[in-house]
Image (tube, rainbow, N blue to C red; front, side, top):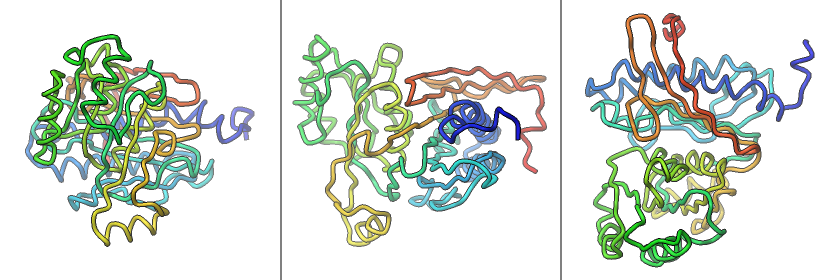
Length: 332
């Protein structure tokens, strides 16, 4: 073994795996992008899953998927409990969404991404595939300026005060769903502007990491719990704030959550409880969006854009890839 490989698990995550994760999400994004705009959500999702699984299994890790994708819509999955990697490296837990925004990809709409997070074993919330009520803001605010248990009106006024602006100068992102009708009505009464999205609430929360670029100050509403963990991991890397509560509104959901270690069905999770320790989050654009450019297919070059977050250093890297070896994107 070379000297470069005689390092601790955390150093491996730092020195080697960060770039390897970029390759994982790049492969998934390119595979999905080949079906961009074709109207076939499941085919695009399957292509992303197959590519991500293949690349994960090449990594020198003893990995386990603790956040998988697709149970609710019966899509192809990298399933919870699946073992990945060569099994010869550090024990790590992984959260994945090989194609966040399957509908966005199928319709070639903005903000479809391939995204994953990797952390030391035991540091990611093993969330069941249910819904989660969420609130998130970006960095630069005192702890507790917003709270999931406060009303949307109170949160908007508190955030506006902390930012030194009027509520009408706060911009909130909410998923456009019938379940959010009352929420949207209340938020609009404050004078706050709302950006509605049809899908992609991982990207929606991550928008809060760069409010000066995205124009989004606050995320509110109900979305997927697995997506919530992925988003919390990214937000934590830049010092934002997020809280979430699982929506366990049936006995079946409560029983399933209990098998995954959720003993308090009403618990309000902090960002740190959803993602702790040394965590890396990597996302590659599939379609063009406000955060990332989508895959661009040229005659001789495939271009990708990827953002990488690392919690232990607070580092954010943007990687523009130009790929001339098209063969690496083919499944074996």
